[in-house]
Length: 579
Image (cartoon, rainbow, N blue to C red; front, side, top):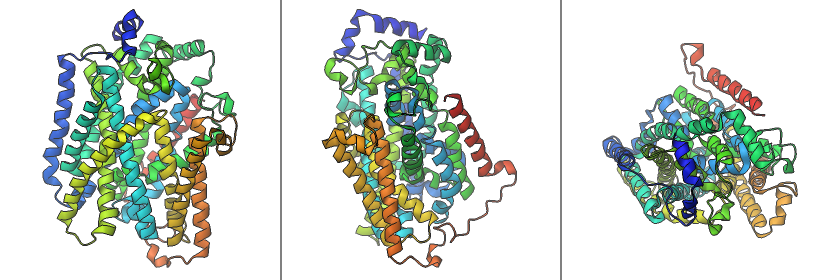
């Protein structure tokens, strides 16, 4: 069995060589061929689709021709990057099954809400981006602020994927960090610049299949080794001397009762209500995929289909981290600063597990799955950056009267520019305690307050132009200010997270909650002090002032609300099972 081979590898005295920077494995000819074929296919797709991206609608929105299934798989795959694969596997090792919250309560309700409630307004307004919706609802001020902050966030997120892929190549294969970053960035730049969003979506569907095919090796072989889920729970209890690593909700009654140092209010309100809804309903990286659907019903079904697959992702991401708690020697993995002591960090747990279970021949497939995930995250951010820059910054403020062909050319060129900037930001990730902490901080800065602005704009006719800008600005500055406060004075965490027992993750959740609350309060106060738009100008933008088009489903089982209900029931059942 592959894990028997790997167990000897990790138990051998020569394992000390791994701590000295040598690669964990070496690829044979078949492994190299698998990786090379993947890169060739990715670039071929870009060249093949170049001829179908001649207009801005085709390049930036894939011609709005995607089916619900294609848009839905792309919707999930665009998010299935380094944060999913490496960040949360490491977090599961660090925090246990609590990391699953970011897939279930931190995703499913928001994805269903997007499909049922918010998608009609995004779709019928024919906007090309979330900042574009804010322009229609609030005007240029809110649009400019959201576009600039989103463009900044996308290049930082793209850098995370580049850095994570380079880490995998370094840990598993011993490749140079700089070489890995440049190979991945050039490949992504080529196929996105050539085929635009259509190329990114087609590759994301391919990458989704590869991720599942390659990443399934670790949980399946791992469960075989430990003897099933029940034995895994018992082994974790034995190894750690505590059972809070295998309970989803029962340990959240107090900050000091769980390894994450968080209270259920932070999970439910900070993560479930603010960060989750902010990301899945206003982050243009994922919303752009849904906007590419060919009709309103497909646009509403896409996030619902995505939610179904999202609930299964912890099996290939969280479970490897839990298995590592049982099967990896504890001296092998340490704190984020472990590199200084010769250990591997939490972010390297998944590559370690991959090498443990993938014998020569299978390793190429597993490494390709990780590469596919990282490149999916890169491509998603780069294509979103290209669209927002071209439509909401360059076309809106710098050159309003250019031809359609000029905007397509600008989109292609700024794809390369976005990748170059992302390469620079990739090196910033090295200074973060973990990938997850870095990303959660970004979300609290930019996504949480944006959700407050968008949701009030959609649900409240009284929200005004000035309120949209000042509410968003106040929320963003609040998040940044709270981060700076705790960064300079760690004892301030007790005030931000409402407890002296709170830990870093709690800070991220409560920071997001405070920034959202400030945004909402400021928006409401300023709205009541300023003049609203006439209701006639809110058609297609706000509930109560818009008529939602009928979808004409032939059968009851084709209705999005039915499938959303089924997903919601499964969501509740899973949370009860792992309570």
